[in-house]
Image (tube, rainbow, N blue to C red):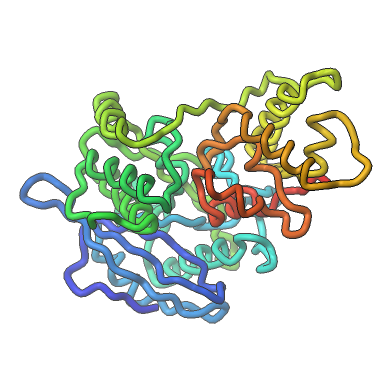
Length: 380
């Protein structure tokens, strides 16, 4: 692996990992934060360039940067789940429904390349002498999940799609409210994610007023063959004054209040109105995802369920009825995606993904959807 860094190593490093197994592999966006004379955290950005998968990673350059920093956090899993488990403890606790199982995922599975790339770099850094999941998050590399972090920092309000100009500005505003300076005029969404990762590293060292770092999950363990398992995930604790400041900054950004799914809400009876059945179905699908058993539905299955009827011959008119009803369901929170309605779970039978029209209003992009729901069971 190579680095494009030109100046000294900052105190705190955050990295937004990518998929080195992809044919369109992008470099890793890296953010460094250093304290300046104004008690701000000045940001610098550079790239780490992957060695192509599935070959061995040479992390000598990257490890030297990490050893020179005070703390670092990466967006990506550091280890596999405990044997016999289909996701790690920190993923269950954060509701990070992009799962890391107890064995390496097949590269045919959605988002598997990202998971394997992340496991590769953590393992290689461990062998190079970089501490993984260090005590109090200092002196090594820890793990974070941006989708969960942005939800906490925004006060559980749904931000615009991270790839849009408004979404990028909204996240930049949050970073600046927390003391980050020298950001680009309009950071990319990868730069925002790398920066919030570095911010958590700085918070762990007490350098972010109004923000503390804590952990969820269970400590990292190592199999006799060197396989890393589980590991803690860093999340922020936000002081009330800081939360109020962020709320004020977000007033100019079109956010939406979302609520959690209700475990007490039962699936509607067969006699329920289509709107009632659609709302109950959305609630059920979110709870399934949070429980580690994500499901999505084809348009035809959704039509039969919510309208409690069948049809003679499937047509676009039925699709339109499903879409119209799904978009009217109230927004609920699905960590990793933020605000979702029923149309987030309705997929085409051909590719098992939402249709192209869905992305025009979605507050997440297709990469996030794949991470969260790409391996879901399809109800057809």
